[in-house]
Amino acid sequence: MNTWLVLGLLLALGIIVGNIMLLKYSANMKFGKSSTKKDDALKSDSPKTDHDKP
Image (cartoon, rainbow, N blue to C red; front, side, top):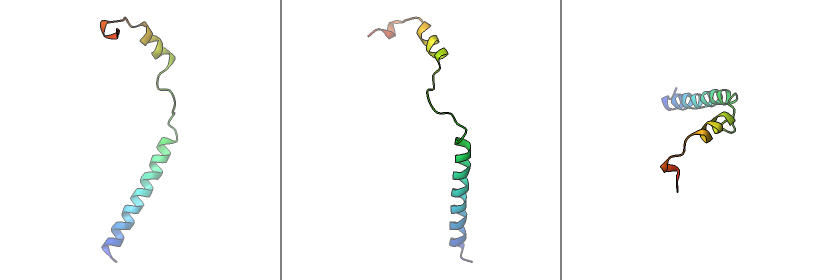
């Protein structure tokens, strides 16, 4: 059997399996806002410094 054929098939199989694993992993991810209301409240309570002035 030709070695280039075997290497090509292994590469294609690896790419397919990798994509399937990536789809399974990303199916459970939640997308949307990364900040929550609690984070926004903490940011607004922080003291103002000279760096915040224009």
